[in-house]
Every structure is written in C-alpha cells, then in structure tokens.
Amino acid sequence: MEKKNINIDEENKSNNENKDLAEEAIKEDDKKELAPEDKIKELEDKLTRTFAEMENQRRRYEKEKEDAFEYGGFAFAKEALNLLDNLDRSKISLENDEKLKKSETLEKIFEHLNIIKKDMVSIFKKNSIEQIETVNKKLDPNYHQAMMEVEDNAKEPGTIVQEIQTGFMMKDRLLRPALVVVSKKPTNSEKKDEIDKNDKKKEKN
Image 1 (cartoon, rainbow, N blue to C red):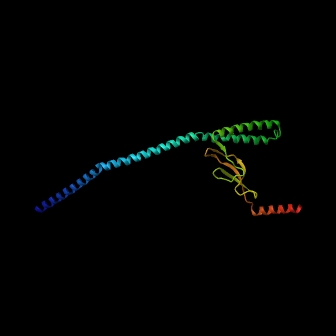
Image 2: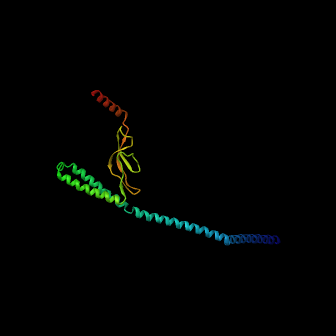
Image 3: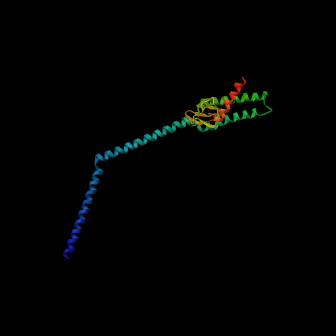
C-alpha cells in the first residue's frame, strides 16, 4: 500500500513538473510576442507590405486609366475599318459592271467614293490610326500576314509584292495586319525555263 502511494506521489510530482515546464514555455512565448522591439519590427514589415501593395494598385489604376484614354476607341476603330473595305469592294463591283464600264457615270461615282475614302482616312489619321506600309517592304509577322507566295527572281525572298487588304495601327497597337503576297525564289525548273527563254531571245536577236 505504501509503494502504491509512493508511485502516485511520484506520478503527481512528474505531472506537476511537466505542467510547470509547459507554463514556462508559454510565458517565454508570450514574452517574445510582447517584446517591444519585435512588435515594432512586425508593424514595420506590415506597413512596408501595405504601402507596396497600395503603390502597385495605384500603378495598375494609372495604367488602366491611360489605356482607357489612349485606346478607348480601339474596338470602334476596328469595326470602322469595314467601311473602308466596303468602299473598295463597291469600286471593284462597279468596275466589273459591263453597263457602267468607261462611262461618265462610273467616273463620277468613283470620284465621290474616293472623296469619302480620303475623308475617312484623314479622320483615322487625326485619331492616330495609320495604314501599314506593305509593297516592296520585307515581310514582318508583327504587321503583315502572308496569304500566298509568288516566284520572283528579281526580288529578295520575303519581299511584299502585292497588298490584298490594307492593315492599320492605332498608335503602337495593331488594329489588324495587312494581308499580302510575298516573293520567293523560283524553283530549279522555273529557273531553267527562264534561262531557256532568255537564250531563245538572244538567238532571235
């Protein structure tokens, strides 16, 4: 019976010691948390992060505001290009009309259409919308879209030889790429035919 009591006392003593150690550890943590230097440092870190986040938000807002001001009419301008395309299609359609070919009526219609197109292009320019240069320029995938290639020994490969559809820029942004035809080197058979043609011309002379 005495042994049992001794064991219980020892166990209680051990539990009390563990409890004391745990309480001391908690007190130490509390001391660390409440240390003024640490509190100040923690607050400084929080303030720094908060100011950084506020600055990033301010910059994002400024950028969005600038973009809205600079490119607010981007979607409208892109749609308005269809008007120019329709003018060009109308001219082609009228040119192919047998009844109107070489008539004074057709010339007057073309004169009016050209005035309208010229005015539209002028309005575009005032709003920083410019046509992309194409013919005799080197193909640039940032501004041009090659629709087909034609063999041309007189030009460097990748040179634009024809414009299918005009491309436009709005300031430094692409409204739409120019659709173009580019040159490529003739194949061996084409080169041979060209040489033969030149030889025949020399013989005739």
